Image (cartoon, rainbow, N blue to C red; front, side, top):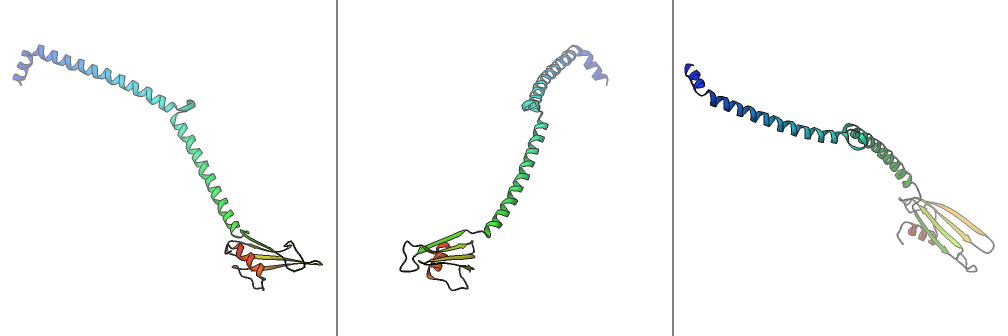
Length: 166
């Protein structure tokens, strides 16, 4: 222990100078650290302030509310889309029209057969026979492109046309 005290007393000036240099270096590093921290804090405050004076947290909360509203609206649209698809399954999607002369003594193709079918080929075929003295109209149900009733060739053609087979 005495040797350490003797060393310190002998080198007191050098040790004091080293201590002063270390203190000055520490002070310099402290100043640099304060400057850097100040710049970082200014950048942080600017970032947190955000657009229109809102801070970042307010902006994020606002955007999350908008996202939640968009998700709710998307769900509404999905439900409406599903309902529309269900309605479309049962709606008339395929139409086939054949015009013709039912009788030799009439002209202008005033008789017709119209097939009105959904995507499964279900629906009806309507035919109208035009004659000089009278007109007759018939409606026959159709399932999968086939009717239980006897069909004329024009009615069959209208069904085939509606189903895209012609």
